[in-house]
Amino acid sequence: MRLSYNMENQEELIYIKRILEGETNLFSCFLEKYSSSIYSLIVRIIPSREDAEELVQDTFLKAFRKLVTFKGDCSFSTWLYRIAYNTAISETRKRKIILPLLDEKMMETLTDDDMDTLFERDEDEVLLQKLEIAIDQLNVEEKTLITLYYYEAKPVAEIAVVFEQTTDNIKVKLFRVRKKIYALMNQ
Amino acid sequence: MKQDKAIFKAVHSRKSPILSAGFNSRMMDQIYHAEAKRKKRSYILSLSSIAVASLGLISLAAYLLKDHIPLNVTLQFPAFLSLNEFISRYGFSFYIGFLILLLMIIDTTFRTFRHKRESDKFRQFK
Image (cartoon, rainbow over all chains, first blue to last red; front, side, top):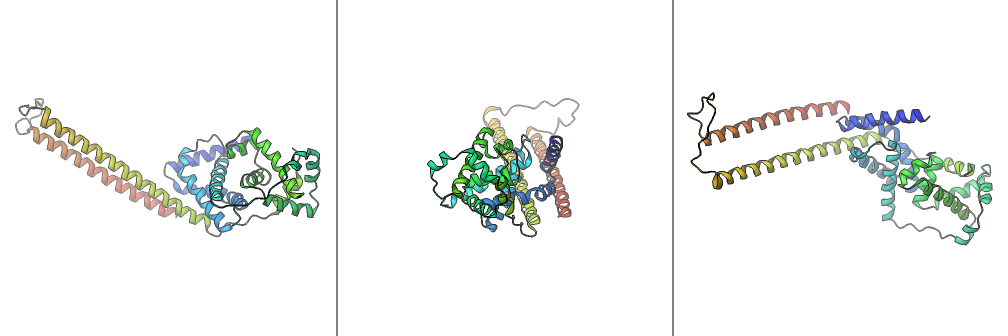
């Protein structure tokens, strides 16, 4: 698994080198490979499909312009996700989004067992609907975190690169997001 | 952290919309456009820096000739150059100027040729 990941990374580095040497048409390989996953990340943050598509364009244009700065210290997809996340963040800053207020005291009293029991019940349709609504009410950072961890199945170390934070920070944030989802579901 | 099967299922139950048809080819057009713009910008930048450097050198030469080099200086060319008789200091300067001009023309010709060849290549890929 690790070997194939490294091989993929090496292959992508070769492609990048060739693009920088003038073979611009090779960039279409990256588009084919990553445009859908970048779109599915952004569309979960920005609900309007048209706006999300525009942000995907911005993401790839930025990636192409900054390609020379990609050093290969993380995978290309992680680097792209970072650009996409920053692009989406700056777009959402322009819009005022009102998020629900939460009962902080209630959140503090939550135990791991409460959450573990609830989040393991994947057969309960009503619970799943409530979960979807709760996820919709999360802020941009939390939605991105949930998408990368649960939908894209990215390891915590790569998510840490996207957010430019430590893995411990990301673990703490994931824990808090679970708590918040629980609290939103029980409001 | 447990598996959180419910969150996993809730996240996956929502179908991601698909990008509009022809998105990738439209995107590639933009990429080609951005690349052409970048090349043009770097060409203009290098041309400007060459122009500035040339102007600087010409000004320096003029300044040196005017104020620091006495006019009675005679240039000593090696004996094997049989041009001694008719090449004056000004003649030599014109000769160097002509060489620079010639090199610039050759450079421009080759650049235009290469640019044309690359454009043909891009058109082929499109």
